[in-house]
Length: 384
Image 1 (cartoon, rainbow, N blue to C red):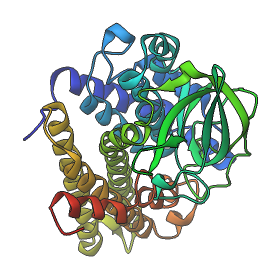
Image 2 (spheres, rainbow, N blue to C red):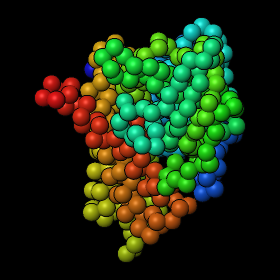
Image 3 (cartoon, rainbow, N blue to C red):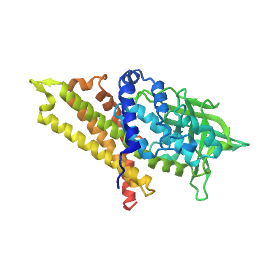
Image 4 (cartoon, rainbow, N blue to C red):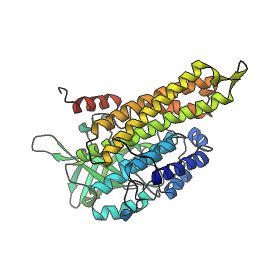
């Protein structure tokens, strides 16, 4: 089970890597420290076609595939993962559900600008009291005439408050199933809709150049036609998107881990101690070698999950393994890179300091690592 990184895929990977080195790396530290969203960088990546990579040309996409998209995410995350997560969330949680489950009218309205990077989309699932228990959704949507009326709140929603945010798709309880369980549906709420309030930007430890807000809905009204997919299938639809998203998140985590290796190799040549480069010390050289081993293995994990996805084979377990392992590796490599850099690793102007601040969220977002272990155990057929 493998995917060759050659031909057009390799050309695209190199193109994105060059953009990341030349356009993102020199400036992203300032955006990060100011907690400012990098609109020009996002626009540049849109012009490069990154947002449209996993979509066919007939809907405005670049005609690539999900694996090529993940390659691009890894290259961007080597430099900065907050930019990478902005793209991953808009594609995986914003555009992909519209493409998969949307009506022709919804596709026509939203996809062109989303896939051009001119608009961002978000997904409102997590709630202040919910966390990993997404099935405990409290936000409700009721039918009133030809409108949905939404009340509730969502937390930690990426891409929900930028000036190019087009909409947030919201999960809400829309009724009760025959077996007594909640009927959960997903509804598209355009930015600026009366009754939807975007909270202030969170003060985050990491991912400070990405956009994250709480959302509140107070008698927020949208047309019934804004229902995304089948009524009552919202939770199932989201789980399907999460399975794919874990591959992309793994690519971002792997990118951070590899970026830590690259920065450590560079620094080990530049920094002199006791009359020679610090990389000549075997203890440090072995530490960097272990970092490379971990990043390489994490990459193989998301490659395998992506190959299964493209082949139409089951990939849920492999995606969970890739996400779990790569997030652990991101934390380990960020910690090691900080140690390699010594005191400078604690200074925010060094990329490894940003990596150290960013790495922890990979063990939490898009399903905690505890959830990944639950999924793997379930796929193995262990007693539930």
